[in-house]
Length: 197
DNA sequence: CAGTGTCA
DNA sequence: CACG
Image 1 (cartoon, rainbow, N blue to C red):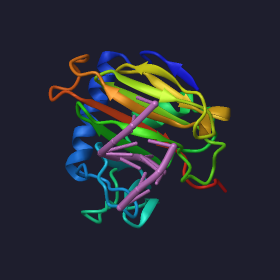
Image 2 (image 1 turned 45 degrees about the vertical axis):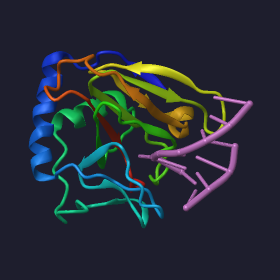
Image 3 (image 1 turned 180 degrees about the horizontal axis):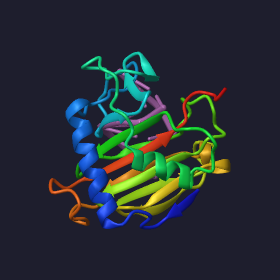
């Protein structure tokens, strides 16, 4: 787990937010639900790139289209591909950018990212907007955990031993950033999904 | 079990 | 930590 504080300056963050606004017009935020129970998540999400992560009553999976519009996900902006190239230390393109929007009060329980085929690729996380309290532990559920504050513009790389660590968001600290006029936090996670040829 | 509710 |  490697944190790069303020890897994106304010101008880069604003440009990214603008790109995300365009993307969300094409691929609206949706509220995922838990497999089997159908209980809703508190975050809303969308995706960019050839594949997107979705959760519904049938389970977790990656798919090439938006679950509500049926249309392909919008392309990943070049700035994200550049960030991957710079921080991922992995010689293939990312295939999915999961966009999670947290309003104040939203959280994400401890989980592992394990729906990808290639755990050799890291997961790269980019934080925008309000500061979040990020919790992470080891590769076993129930192990010791620590917390870390993630600020707007931070890039976190979960690779190597940290690739399968349990992690989640305890809470979002309202009013800690002026980046998003509507408040809240956006997290982007870039992932390689399929095993490269 | 990427969810919530409850209790020490 | 148990649940549905």
